[in-house]
Length: 140
Image: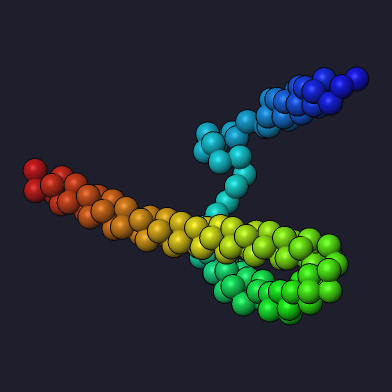
């Protein structure tokens, strides 16, 4: 079997498994549609906080070996070892992946902070609307 045939078969199997799992999700009797996912502002805030901490740690800890790795790659290359270029390439790829993770953590943290802020504003608006509605009913 060729790679393309194996890949197609694996994708078809995965798609069928996902479809079966989705079809087996129990119906929420309350009609909430959340499927048992109960998140409140404290949970969202905690997740955002952890994403921010991971972002901060990755910015420093993800780069702690960059200088020594570059020096080692330079020394190996100077001595005509092919592994010097390979080490430099691996280091460049590592730095690229760390930057991607840092950006992803920042997106998560910022997105959750925005969601909390937006939700709080929506709650204030709803509270004001309901208060106004209640006042109108008393005035009539």
